Amino acid sequence: MNIAIWLKILMPVLVIMLLVVAGDAMAAGDWKTFVKPDKEELRARLTSLQFQVTQEEGTEPPFKNEYADNHHEGIYVDVVSGEPLFSSTHKYDSGTGWPSFWQPLAPENIVEREDRRLFSTRTEVRSKHADSHLGHVFNDGPPPTGLRYCMNSAAMRFIPKEELAKEGYGEFLPIFGER
Picture 1 (cartoon, one colour):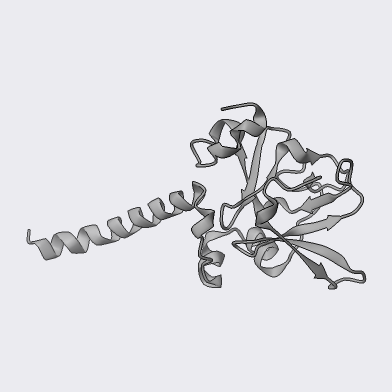
Picture 2 (cartoon, rainbow, N blue to C red; picture 1 turned 180 degrees about the vertical axis):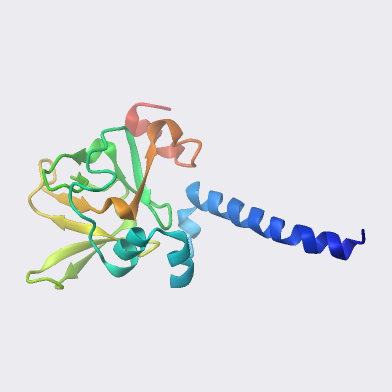
């Protein structure tokens, strides 16, 4: 068999392998060099709910989402970019049906904007690098901040404490008393 035939056979496999490796690199905490894909690529990569929430400022149903009742130790990262957002150490049960936090894990990855879309003015929370809509922040949270970051599970991915190092987020292990 000549080389042209081999290349024709192997090229699709190599392209798929490169895409998988690139996806794993992004999942491994390479959010600082993240370049946001176009809408078509995001639509193909995300579930319809994840796309609606992060790209179209949607809101998932309360009490019927992945992380409202998650009580495991770990961190929450942006589902699009992988940038670290919140920690289970700052999570609390707000009774709203959405995962709520009294402060961000990495405030430098959080952008707050005025939101006048409904009948009142709220503060929208977005991720810095992916510009994903995450949820809203309210001034009715617990001490010490008095804030309630009310987030959509669909905008985040949870990484358990045990997998932080493997996923490229080992720098956050000390939060959980780990090295």
